[in-house]
Length: 184
Image (cartoon, rainbow, N blue to C red; front, side):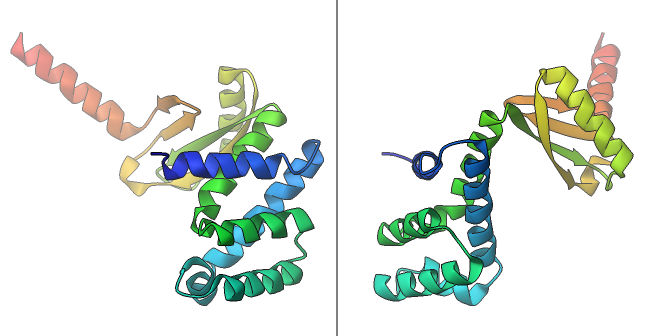
């Protein structure tokens, strides 16, 4: 059985294939992200579009109106209607994530996520972005987030690589070292 992640990847690749060239792909991504954000930002809209309780024709009519209001391209409108037909519109957020990955890959960028204990100023963000780019050897598109439980430091994930420079992890490692030292 195919999981939701794989289904989202397939739809993202299909949407990516609707255009040619980096600029066109980036535009598709922006439009699909805008649609996803609009649906996520409205409980009423989400209820109508994501719940199969409403007839497909009604959901598609709402989607067409929304597409017109947002100025979406024909490609994105048709793709979104196919998602409604297949009851897959709920997969829009992971489709956006995969589409972003494809656009970044095409542009020679890799996505990274950096989590810090407190918000980072612009200078710190630039330094971290540059350090990650040097580390992986390609341009890095960084998504910054905050997690107060880290105490201090940062945790960065670039692809499958996890770089943990958090104070919490350093304290845990120190504790393990002390336990081993006292057991000897």
